[in-house]
Image 1 (cartoon, rainbow, N blue to C red):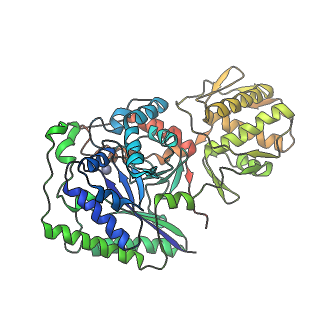
Image 2: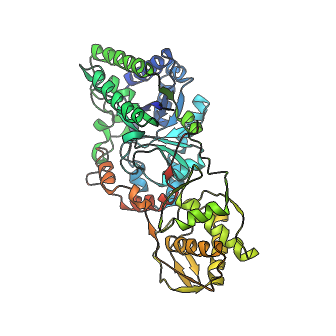
Image 3: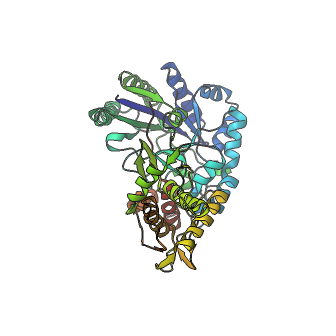
Length: 475
Ligand SMILES: [Zn+2]
């Protein structure tokens, strides 16, 4: 069955320009008149400003739409990536909660809903945010970023559904911003939409087309933050400049273009317009509550010449899930002297620090099984893969430990009884889903200080690719 999911999302962040409040309201109303639910990702300061300006009418217009979160202050320095730049995974997540948590609270207080999704300001993608999102019960990452991607697919990362970097036969990300209302623009957007649909339909499969807008761009000629927060500089909050406004005729033409575009999208029979909450339901991860059989784990173990996510029994499992299934089996082997018939899956986070094996030698079977047992206990306590594993007085990386463990598993499955385990070097594929070209693109965001770089974020992001795997719909 061919299905094109279309999601309309709106980054509502301009707390400087009063006219942008009206734009937000108008867009929410146009959607409603077309019987479409949009996703409105709100900045904390934006919602507080709406309250201060007594714009209950705008807040009312948001009712019935899906509500997302877009940080507490967006471009006010330090932005998310600026303050997380040198922090480790866990303390970075706590720092995010400390600085941004008020925004989520204000959304809950004012709108009475919990945000369904999050997306970063500009290029400020950072991996520690994912741990914070788990603690905030925000299940979806909805944005566009070149930092991380899985061949154009929607994907799971740290247990969060990412609708982020859609390309090829899996969809597209289309921006409708300042150009709305200019000659020929909407026809061009419709063409881009058709092309994306054709790529999906040709495969007789499914895809997601992600369409985004910043409501402020309906009324202004430039970004509210570019005139106040460019190149790492903060304009004091009582001296903020308002961006140049568009003439009224242009503004009205923009709304009418937007309305036209929604009607065009809705006219396609294979389109289903969805929200972030809908996608989280449709793309539910079936591996989470799955019991894996010995045969399935054997099949995973014997395909692990290089480590990555795998598809088995119509379900994707991440490298971290494979790590769990094999390690938990070997821990059981230590206790019962045989591999378990079934193992309940667990979705673990990746290690927090990069570690290279001290040495790769041969260790006693007993030592390797003890290491598996201890590692299983660590993972149950901490919900993540340890930074290293100690096997027979040698510290080895999780990559090498899994490679060695997978080989041992296949031997035990085949009723061999080795006395020693050879520690072997593993190849870990998923690091490639963090793109070093992409990260440099992200760091060109005009709001960052000049020559901004944050390589620690890249390293932490790579460590969490243990958790990456494609997401697919069940329908
Ligand atoms: Zn934004």
